[in-house]
Amino acid sequence: MRGSSGSIFNPASPHTEAISHLFVISLWVCAIIFAIVAGLVGYSIVRYRWHEGDRDPAQVAGNKMVEIIWTVTPLLIVLVLFGLTVHAMQRSDPPATGDPDFVIVGHQWWWEIRAAKDGFVTANELHLPVGRAISIELDTADVLHEFWVPQLTRKMTTVPGARNHLWLQADRPGTYEGVCSEFCGTQHAWMRFQVIAESPEAYQAWVRRQQQAAATPTGPAARGRALFAEMTCVNCHSTDQKNFAINAGPNLAHLASRRMIGSAIVSNTPANLRRWLADPQQVKPGVKMPDFKLTNEQTNALVAYFETLK
Ligand code: CUA
Image (tube, rainbow, N blue to C red; front, side, top):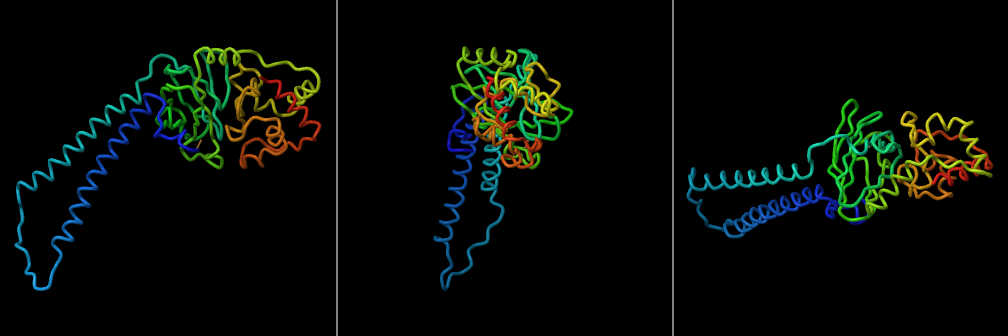
């Protein structure tokens, strides 16, 4: 992760706070044990080293008191850590209740975000209202992936044929980086996403915008829209925010409103869109989008169209 902002040591939700606390406590317990053991070994080496003329020390075996101490002490430490772990598990993974707010589907190599309750589908950028726990169901379109926002959630695998669940909550506004943390093929490392936590009003505004139909442009952008429909783009991408069926590639109804493209790997600028259209494999080797060998004129028209999809 970049810098400390995306670090597990900078938790921003009750779930990751529980995990982070447990980690720090375990680290201290291990550090103290290490210091005691290493200290005693060091002391013994110096204090009882062999000197010329030393006789063998008295041979003792089976000191009951010592054996009780070194059996009971580790047992108590393990029991305490077990208790703390169960507590952290309960805090970081509350049981699912009701229908999920979002179903997130892992694809090679991007994230589909389905908001069945609110009636829209988007990709790679999820917004959250600060301080509220949002229920997420995880699914996959192909192989095992793993959904992870280090500052907000524990890791959770997406499993073909099974549904997993987690809660997403952010206690501070901000942009949180998400990753896929289960190896899933060529572009596993670039299967990123962003979680943007904002005020409840801003979140509602985001939901309302996602629910709106895509813009119908005029001018050069209209030419782009026609190209989009004539070429094979529409086989994989829909610009209908309610179309849950066409999902081989991300839904583009509000592409221009997203901060990043290519599954959160480059910022969403006209220059980057042009690079992507000109040769997707150059930007993201292995990506399932082919190189369409577009002419300059076609590329410009498509970029103009995508820029209208606010
Ligand atoms: Cu998806 Cu790794």
